[in-house]
Image 1: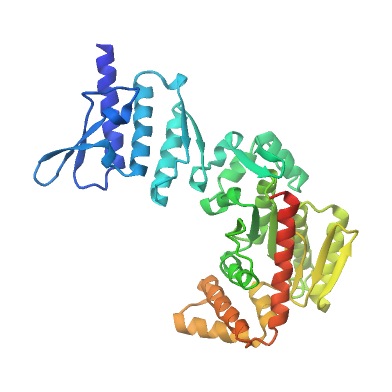
Image 2 (image 1 turned 135 degrees about the vertical axis):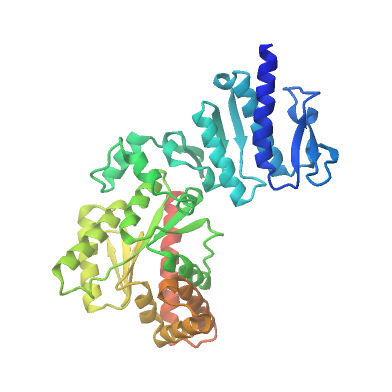
Length: 415
Protein backbone atom coordinates (compact mmCIF):
# COMPACT_ATOMS: atom_id res chain seq x y z
CA UNK A 1 0.00 0.00 0.00
CA UNK A 2 2.79 2.37 0.83
CA UNK A 3 4.38 2.02 -2.62
CA UNK A 4 1.00 2.62 -4.21
CA UNK A 5 0.49 5.84 -2.24
CA UNK A 6 4.00 6.96 -3.16
CA UNK A 7 3.34 6.16 -6.78
CA UNK A 8 0.12 8.14 -6.81
CA UNK A 9 1.81 11.09 -5.14
CA UNK A 10 4.67 10.84 -7.63
CA UNK A 11 2.27 10.77 -10.57
CA UNK A 12 0.28 13.74 -9.25
CA UNK A 13 3.38 15.84 -8.62
CA UNK A 14 4.76 15.07 -12.05
CA UNK A 15 1.51 15.88 -13.81
CA UNK A 16 1.17 19.21 -12.02
CA UNK A 17 4.73 20.26 -12.73
CA UNK A 18 4.81 19.02 -16.33
CA UNK A 19 1.54 20.72 -17.24
CA UNK A 20 3.13 23.94 -16.07
CA UNK A 21 6.02 23.35 -18.45
CA UNK A 22 3.64 22.68 -21.35
CA UNK A 23 1.21 25.47 -20.49
CA UNK A 24 1.67 27.09 -23.90
CA UNK A 25 0.22 24.05 -25.70
CA UNK A 26 -3.49 24.09 -26.66
CA UNK A 27 -5.05 21.55 -24.38
CA UNK A 28 -3.74 19.69 -21.38
CA UNK A 29 -1.63 16.65 -20.67
CA UNK A 30 -2.24 13.31 -19.08
CA UNK A 31 0.49 10.75 -18.61
CA UNK A 32 0.58 7.01 -19.21
CA UNK A 33 2.84 5.15 -16.76
CA UNK A 34 1.52 1.72 -17.62
CA UNK A 35 4.96 0.64 -18.82
CA UNK A 36 6.83 2.68 -16.26
CA UNK A 37 10.46 1.75 -15.77
CA UNK A 38 12.62 4.09 -13.64
CA UNK A 39 15.76 2.85 -15.42
CA UNK A 40 14.54 4.13 -18.78
CA UNK A 41 12.13 6.96 -18.21
CA UNK A 42 11.81 8.45 -21.65
CA UNK A 43 11.35 5.27 -23.69
CA UNK A 44 8.51 3.99 -21.52
CA UNK A 45 6.77 7.33 -20.99
CA UNK A 46 3.77 8.15 -23.16
CA UNK A 47 1.66 11.26 -23.19
CA UNK A 48 -2.06 11.54 -23.76
CA UNK A 49 -2.79 14.93 -25.23
CA UNK A 50 -6.40 15.91 -24.73
CA UNK A 51 -7.70 18.62 -27.07
CA UNK A 52 -9.51 21.26 -25.02
CA UNK A 53 -12.09 21.86 -27.75
CA UNK A 54 -13.44 18.47 -28.81
CA UNK A 55 -12.27 16.30 -25.91
CA UNK A 56 -10.61 13.94 -28.38
CA UNK A 57 -7.67 11.88 -27.20
CA UNK A 58 -4.44 11.49 -29.06
CA UNK A 59 -1.56 9.32 -27.85
CA UNK A 60 1.76 11.04 -28.47
CA UNK A 61 5.30 9.71 -27.95
CA UNK A 62 7.63 11.57 -25.61
CA UNK A 63 9.81 12.39 -28.62
CA UNK A 64 7.21 14.84 -29.92
CA UNK A 65 8.41 17.43 -27.43
CA UNK A 66 11.09 19.93 -28.28
CA UNK A 67 14.62 19.32 -26.98
CA UNK A 68 14.31 21.97 -24.27
CA UNK A 69 10.95 20.67 -23.08
CA UNK A 70 12.27 17.12 -22.96
CA UNK A 71 15.23 18.22 -20.85
CA UNK A 72 12.96 19.94 -18.35
CA UNK A 73 10.50 17.02 -18.30
CA UNK A 74 13.28 14.54 -17.57
CA UNK A 75 14.52 16.73 -14.75
CA UNK A 76 11.02 17.00 -13.27
CA UNK A 77 10.60 13.24 -13.55
CA UNK A 78 13.85 12.63 -11.67
CA UNK A 79 12.94 15.22 -9.03
CA UNK A 80 9.44 13.79 -8.43
CA UNK A 81 10.78 10.25 -8.27
CA UNK A 82 13.44 11.21 -5.71
CA UNK A 83 10.96 13.24 -3.65
CA UNK A 84 8.22 10.64 -3.43
CA UNK A 85 10.36 7.54 -3.08
CA UNK A 86 12.59 9.10 -0.41
CA UNK A 87 15.71 9.14 -2.55
CA UNK A 88 16.64 12.83 -2.32
CA UNK A 89 19.43 12.31 0.18
CA UNK A 90 21.02 9.67 -2.05
CA UNK A 91 20.51 11.39 -5.39
CA UNK A 92 22.85 13.83 -7.11
CA UNK A 93 21.41 15.25 -10.30
CA UNK A 94 23.98 16.28 -12.94
CA UNK A 95 22.79 18.64 -15.67
CA UNK A 96 25.07 19.69 -18.52
CA UNK A 97 24.16 23.14 -19.89
CA UNK A 98 20.55 23.36 -18.68
CA UNK A 99 20.12 26.46 -20.83
CA UNK A 100 20.52 24.59 -24.11
CA UNK A 101 17.46 24.63 -26.40
CA UNK A 102 15.65 27.04 -24.06
CA UNK A 103 14.73 30.64 -24.83
CA UNK A 104 15.72 33.26 -22.20
CA UNK A 105 12.36 33.27 -20.37
CA UNK A 106 12.41 29.47 -20.12
CA UNK A 107 15.99 29.62 -18.84
CA UNK A 108 14.95 31.95 -16.05
CA UNK A 109 12.03 29.69 -15.14
CA UNK A 110 14.20 26.57 -15.14
CA UNK A 111 16.90 28.26 -13.05
CA UNK A 112 14.28 29.33 -10.51
CA UNK A 113 12.97 25.76 -10.28
CA UNK A 114 16.45 24.32 -9.84
CA UNK A 115 17.14 26.58 -6.87
CA UNK A 116 13.72 25.88 -5.38
CA UNK A 117 14.32 22.14 -5.54
CA UNK A 118 17.85 22.44 -4.19
CA UNK A 119 16.49 24.24 -1.12
CA UNK A 120 14.23 21.20 -0.56
CA UNK A 121 17.32 19.00 -0.30
CA UNK A 122 17.95 17.76 -3.84
CA UNK A 123 21.65 17.94 -4.72
CA UNK A 124 22.12 19.45 -8.18
CA UNK A 125 25.36 19.97 -10.09
CA UNK A 126 25.22 21.97 -13.31
CA UNK A 127 27.69 23.20 -15.89
CA UNK A 128 26.46 26.32 -17.62
CA UNK A 129 27.26 29.17 -19.98
CA UNK A 130 24.20 31.19 -18.97
CA UNK A 131 24.11 33.95 -16.34
CA UNK A 132 20.56 32.92 -15.40
CA UNK A 133 21.94 29.84 -13.66
CA UNK A 134 24.45 31.76 -11.54
CA UNK A 135 23.17 32.61 -8.07
CA UNK A 136 25.62 34.46 -5.85
CA UNK A 137 23.73 33.30 -2.76
CA UNK A 138 25.56 30.02 -3.40
CA UNK A 139 28.95 31.58 -4.08
CA UNK A 140 30.81 28.84 -2.22
CA UNK A 141 29.38 26.36 -4.74
CA UNK A 142 30.49 28.28 -7.84
CA UNK A 143 33.51 26.82 -9.64
CA UNK A 144 34.85 28.76 -12.60
CA UNK A 145 36.69 26.50 -15.04
CA UNK A 146 39.37 28.33 -17.03
CA UNK A 147 42.17 27.50 -19.45
CA UNK A 148 45.62 28.89 -20.10
CA UNK A 149 48.78 27.68 -21.79
CA UNK A 150 49.38 25.27 -18.90
CA UNK A 151 46.00 23.60 -19.18
CA UNK A 152 42.67 23.68 -17.37
CA UNK A 153 42.28 24.99 -13.83
CA UNK A 154 39.46 25.89 -11.46
CA UNK A 155 38.88 29.12 -9.53
CA UNK A 156 36.68 28.99 -6.43
CA UNK A 157 35.79 31.41 -3.64
CA UNK A 158 33.89 31.26 -0.40
CA UNK A 159 32.76 34.02 1.93
CA UNK A 160 36.14 34.21 3.68
CA UNK A 161 38.38 34.26 0.59
CA UNK A 162 36.14 36.78 -1.21
CA UNK A 163 36.01 39.02 1.84
CA UNK A 164 39.79 38.94 2.22
CA UNK A 165 40.28 39.71 -1.47
CA UNK A 166 37.92 42.68 -1.21
CA UNK A 167 39.83 43.99 1.83
CA UNK A 168 43.11 43.71 -0.07
CA UNK A 169 41.53 45.70 -2.90
CA UNK A 170 40.35 48.60 -0.74
CA UNK A 171 37.04 47.47 0.79
CA UNK A 172 38.12 47.74 4.42
CA UNK A 173 34.62 47.07 5.78
CA UNK A 174 34.19 43.82 3.89
CA UNK A 175 33.30 40.94 6.19
CA UNK A 176 32.64 37.28 5.52
CA UNK A 177 29.33 37.52 7.39
CA UNK A 178 27.82 39.90 4.82
CA UNK A 179 29.92 39.79 1.65
CA UNK A 180 27.76 37.19 -0.10
CA UNK A 181 24.55 39.08 0.57
CA UNK A 182 26.29 42.32 -0.47
CA UNK A 183 26.92 40.90 -3.94
CA UNK A 184 23.81 38.78 -4.41
CA UNK A 185 21.32 41.61 -3.78
CA UNK A 186 22.88 43.82 -6.45
CA UNK A 187 23.74 41.24 -9.11
CA UNK A 188 21.86 41.10 -12.42
CA UNK A 189 22.09 38.73 -15.39
CA UNK A 190 23.84 41.44 -17.42
CA UNK A 191 26.53 41.82 -14.74
CA UNK A 192 26.89 38.06 -14.23
CA UNK A 193 27.69 37.68 -17.94
CA UNK A 194 31.15 38.84 -16.94
CA UNK A 195 31.86 35.37 -15.52
CA UNK A 196 32.04 34.04 -19.08
CA UNK A 197 34.36 36.74 -20.47
CA UNK A 198 38.09 36.76 -21.08
CA UNK A 199 38.07 40.39 -19.99
CA UNK A 200 35.42 42.64 -18.48
CA UNK A 201 35.10 46.33 -19.35
CA UNK A 202 33.22 48.14 -16.60
CA UNK A 203 31.56 51.45 -17.46
CA UNK A 204 29.41 53.86 -15.49
CA UNK A 205 26.27 53.72 -17.60
CA UNK A 206 24.47 52.44 -20.66
CA UNK A 207 25.73 55.37 -22.78
CA UNK A 208 29.28 54.02 -22.80
CA UNK A 209 28.06 50.44 -22.94
CA UNK A 210 26.16 51.06 -26.17
CA UNK A 211 28.47 53.56 -27.92
CA UNK A 212 31.99 52.27 -27.22
CA UNK A 213 31.62 48.99 -29.19
CA UNK A 214 30.86 51.04 -32.32
CA UNK A 215 34.11 52.98 -32.02
CA UNK A 216 36.10 49.85 -31.20
CA UNK A 217 34.76 48.14 -34.31
CA UNK A 218 36.18 50.99 -36.34
CA UNK A 219 39.72 50.21 -35.14
CA UNK A 220 39.32 46.47 -35.66
CA UNK A 221 38.26 45.37 -32.20
CA UNK A 222 35.17 43.16 -32.16
CA UNK A 223 34.49 42.85 -28.43
CA UNK A 224 32.31 39.77 -28.76
CA UNK A 225 34.77 37.96 -31.02
CA UNK A 226 37.56 38.61 -28.53
CA UNK A 227 35.48 37.42 -25.58
CA UNK A 228 35.29 40.88 -24.02
CA UNK A 229 32.11 41.82 -22.13
CA UNK A 230 31.29 45.51 -21.61
CA UNK A 231 29.07 45.99 -18.57
CA UNK A 232 27.21 49.02 -17.29
CA UNK A 233 27.19 49.07 -13.47
CA UNK A 234 24.92 52.11 -12.97
CA UNK A 235 27.38 54.64 -11.62
CA UNK A 236 31.04 55.25 -10.97
CA UNK A 237 30.75 54.25 -7.30
CA UNK A 238 29.71 50.73 -8.36
CA UNK A 239 32.79 50.05 -10.48
CA UNK A 240 35.15 49.00 -7.62
CA UNK A 241 32.59 46.53 -6.25
CA UNK A 242 32.47 44.53 -9.46
CA UNK A 243 36.19 44.85 -10.19
CA UNK A 244 36.77 43.14 -6.84
CA UNK A 245 34.35 40.31 -7.59
CA UNK A 246 35.63 39.53 -11.07
CA UNK A 247 39.29 39.85 -10.09
CA UNK A 248 38.63 37.38 -7.25
CA UNK A 249 37.86 34.91 -10.04
CA UNK A 250 40.97 35.96 -11.98
CA UNK A 251 38.98 37.74 -14.68
CA UNK A 252 40.92 40.84 -15.81
CA UNK A 253 39.05 44.14 -15.67
CA UNK A 254 39.36 47.47 -17.45
CA UNK A 255 37.45 50.51 -16.14
CA UNK A 256 36.12 53.59 -17.95
CA UNK A 257 35.09 56.45 -15.69
CA UNK A 258 34.55 60.23 -15.59
CA UNK A 259 36.86 62.62 -13.76
CA UNK A 260 35.07 65.98 -13.64
CA UNK A 261 37.94 67.62 -11.80
CA UNK A 262 38.28 70.62 -14.12
CA UNK A 263 34.56 71.44 -13.90
CA UNK A 264 34.84 71.48 -10.10
CA UNK A 265 38.36 72.87 -9.74
CA UNK A 266 37.10 75.74 -7.55
CA UNK A 267 35.02 73.50 -5.28
CA UNK A 268 37.30 71.79 -2.78
CA UNK A 269 34.70 69.31 -1.56
CA UNK A 270 33.92 68.20 -5.11
CA UNK A 271 37.62 67.90 -5.89
CA UNK A 272 38.19 65.67 -2.90
CA UNK A 273 35.18 63.54 -3.78
CA UNK A 274 36.37 62.93 -7.35
CA UNK A 275 39.85 62.09 -6.11
CA UNK A 276 38.52 59.59 -3.56
CA UNK A 277 36.27 57.97 -6.17
CA UNK A 278 39.22 57.62 -8.55
CA UNK A 279 41.41 56.21 -5.76
CA UNK A 280 38.81 53.60 -4.91
CA UNK A 281 38.66 52.43 -8.52
CA UNK A 282 42.46 52.35 -8.85
CA UNK A 283 42.87 50.41 -5.59
CA UNK A 284 40.30 47.85 -6.75
CA UNK A 285 42.27 47.46 -9.99
CA UNK A 286 45.37 46.52 -7.98
CA UNK A 287 47.54 49.65 -8.09
CA UNK A 288 49.68 50.39 -5.04
CA UNK A 289 49.44 53.61 -3.02
CA UNK A 290 52.51 55.26 -4.54
CA UNK A 291 51.38 54.72 -8.11
CA UNK A 292 47.82 55.79 -7.31
CA UNK A 293 48.96 59.17 -5.97
CA UNK A 294 51.09 59.75 -9.06
CA UNK A 295 48.19 58.87 -11.34
CA UNK A 296 45.83 61.18 -9.38
CA UNK A 297 48.29 64.08 -9.57
CA UNK A 298 48.73 63.59 -13.29
CA UNK A 299 44.96 63.45 -13.78
CA UNK A 300 44.56 66.69 -11.83
CA UNK A 301 47.19 68.50 -13.89
CA UNK A 302 45.96 67.12 -17.19
CA UNK A 303 42.31 67.86 -16.47
CA UNK A 304 43.02 71.50 -15.63
CA UNK A 305 45.85 72.40 -18.00
CA UNK A 306 45.30 69.96 -20.86
CA UNK A 307 48.08 67.93 -22.39
CA UNK A 308 48.08 66.44 -25.86
CA UNK A 309 49.46 62.96 -26.50
CA UNK A 310 52.16 62.76 -23.84
CA UNK A 311 53.00 59.15 -22.95
CA UNK A 312 54.53 58.61 -19.51
CA UNK A 313 56.15 55.36 -18.39
CA UNK A 314 56.58 54.44 -14.73
CA UNK A 315 59.38 51.96 -14.01
CA UNK A 316 58.22 49.75 -16.92
CA UNK A 317 55.17 48.76 -14.85
CA UNK A 318 52.54 50.54 -16.88
CA UNK A 319 52.05 53.31 -19.41
CA UNK A 320 49.77 56.33 -19.25
CA UNK A 321 48.83 58.28 -22.34
CA UNK A 322 47.46 61.78 -21.82
CA UNK A 323 45.29 63.55 -24.35
CA UNK A 324 43.26 66.74 -24.08
CA UNK A 325 40.04 64.94 -23.22
CA UNK A 326 41.02 61.45 -22.06
CA UNK A 327 43.77 59.68 -20.16
CA UNK A 328 44.47 56.06 -21.09
CA UNK A 329 46.10 53.69 -18.64
CA UNK A 330 46.89 49.99 -18.72
CA UNK A 331 43.74 49.14 -16.72
CA UNK A 332 41.64 52.28 -17.04
CA UNK A 333 40.50 55.09 -19.30
CA UNK A 334 39.43 58.41 -17.80
CA UNK A 335 37.21 61.00 -19.45
CA UNK A 336 38.37 64.38 -18.16
CA UNK A 337 34.81 65.68 -18.06
CA UNK A 338 32.28 63.00 -19.00
CA UNK A 339 31.81 60.65 -21.95
CA UNK A 340 29.73 62.99 -24.11
CA UNK A 341 32.00 65.98 -23.54
CA UNK A 342 35.06 63.86 -24.28
CA UNK A 343 33.54 62.73 -27.59
CA UNK A 344 32.69 66.33 -28.47
CA UNK A 345 36.28 67.28 -27.74
CA UNK A 346 37.70 64.43 -29.80
CA UNK A 347 35.38 64.80 -32.82
CA UNK A 348 34.82 68.56 -32.70
CA UNK A 349 31.66 70.21 -33.98
CA UNK A 350 30.74 67.10 -35.96
CA UNK A 351 29.68 65.26 -32.82
CA UNK A 352 27.27 67.92 -31.58
CA UNK A 353 25.85 68.38 -35.07
CA UNK A 354 25.13 64.66 -35.40
CA UNK A 355 23.75 64.58 -31.88
CA UNK A 356 21.20 67.28 -32.69
CA UNK A 357 20.21 65.52 -35.92
CA UNK A 358 19.65 62.21 -34.14
CA UNK A 359 17.56 63.78 -31.39
CA UNK A 360 15.37 65.58 -33.90
CA UNK A 361 14.97 62.68 -36.33
CA UNK A 362 14.12 60.03 -33.73
CA UNK A 363 12.42 62.28 -31.13
CA UNK A 364 14.95 61.34 -28.44
CA UNK A 365 15.67 63.41 -25.35
CA UNK A 366 18.16 63.45 -22.51
CA UNK A 367 16.61 60.35 -20.93
CA UNK A 368 17.48 58.41 -24.06
CA UNK A 369 21.02 59.70 -24.29
CA UNK A 370 22.38 56.15 -24.46
CA UNK A 371 20.40 55.57 -27.67
CA UNK A 372 21.51 58.95 -29.00
CA UNK A 373 25.16 58.15 -28.26
CA UNK A 374 25.01 54.82 -30.08
CA UNK A 375 23.40 56.32 -33.20
CA UNK A 376 25.84 59.25 -33.18
CA UNK A 377 28.72 56.78 -32.93
CA UNK A 378 27.48 54.98 -36.06
CA UNK A 379 27.28 58.27 -37.96
CA UNK A 380 30.66 59.45 -36.72
CA UNK A 381 32.30 56.20 -37.83
CA UNK A 382 30.71 56.56 -41.25
CA UNK A 383 31.98 60.13 -41.47
CA UNK A 384 35.49 59.01 -40.54
CA UNK A 385 35.40 56.47 -43.35
CA UNK A 386 34.43 59.27 -45.73
CA UNK A 387 37.09 61.62 -44.31
CA UNK A 388 34.48 64.10 -43.10
CA UNK A 389 35.82 64.33 -39.54
CA UNK A 390 38.48 66.96 -38.87
CA UNK A 391 40.27 65.06 -36.08
CA UNK A 392 39.75 61.55 -37.43
CA UNK A 393 43.43 60.59 -37.07
CA UNK A 394 43.46 61.60 -33.40
CA UNK A 395 40.20 59.75 -32.73
CA UNK A 396 41.49 56.57 -34.34
CA UNK A 397 44.77 56.87 -32.41
CA UNK A 398 42.93 57.15 -29.09
CA UNK A 399 40.76 54.09 -29.64
CA UNK A 400 43.70 52.11 -30.97
CA UNK A 401 45.61 52.92 -27.78
CA UNK A 402 42.76 51.55 -25.71
CA UNK A 403 42.62 48.49 -27.98
CA UNK A 404 46.34 47.90 -27.35
CA UNK A 405 45.87 48.13 -23.59
CA UNK A 406 42.95 45.68 -23.64
CA UNK A 407 44.92 43.20 -25.74
CA UNK A 408 47.91 43.46 -23.42
CA UNK A 409 45.71 42.89 -20.38
CA UNK A 410 44.24 39.70 -21.86
CA UNK A 411 47.72 38.42 -22.77
CA UNK A 412 49.04 39.12 -19.27
CA UNK A 413 46.16 37.16 -17.75
CA UNK A 414 46.89 34.16 -19.95
CA UNK A 415 43.47 34.40 -21.63
